[in-house]
Image (cartoon, rainbow, N blue to C red):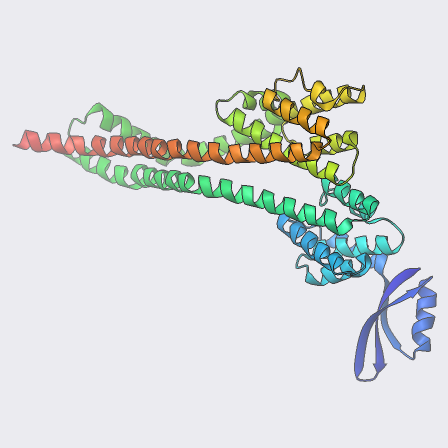
Length: 401
């Protein structure tokens, strides 16, 4: 049975809106006429959703998905039916496109589709991991618990992101101030001083001549330089990065400090996702396939797919990792203990916590070294500029004396 949204007049002064269920538009019209309504508009819900999705091709942020998950989990925990809970959440959503998507999901659920199947129709919003967690919750009868786990996962990702932003914000601020200072010196201060020196017809030191020439070059050609830089970036990202992603990701893993940091972040997300899926009742092989999709580095993802094939052949999880250089002996030992004790999901969760803790401590140590290094480098540039500009003035004073 389809749902139809109508707008009608109950009397000459009152306009009402509502929903009527009927097999067809003609039957909906008959039902409304029997109530004595003067119909102004009648449209099937499915057609409205199609129009909204066509007109509002917007984006849905992680924060909005997290809030939706939290509200839905809270409503289900309170005993509200899923379809009714979805209708309530649509009233709370500010994003019109996301609202239309949730309304469509609600319509599909009421039409007989499962919640996970309905979510899978929007892979650009709900990841395979999200859909799998919901599917596991439906199978176990604990959908609200699965949504609660998803909400906690969003919170942990948000916390990690906030910690990283907090750590890099100060160095980024220093770099920004340094760049602005250099632009002011090169673009405004130096040209004025160079004009003064040219009027004096004084033989300038080499460093001053070099600086003035560089300043003139930047001032005269900054537009062309910016355009060339933009084209260079576009070509690199559009062609080189996409066609050589494996080689680039492999190179990233060999960069000192950054390589280890990338590896720990990827491992942290992989093990936490795998732990959550196993806790939700999914089989190991299905969980490994979904968990591999959250790993962005192609090299590590291919390594996961490699040992997944070994597990399919009958090897244990820990034994399949024996030849992998990306998983340390510590990781292999913890997984082995989890398999032997029958608590693999808890061992994997412990590993994810260890990796994320190491990421945070590594970043803090790195930033303690990076901040004074940035200040020193910027100070050297500014110092060179100031000395190069003051040197001819000092020499001129010496000649006059």
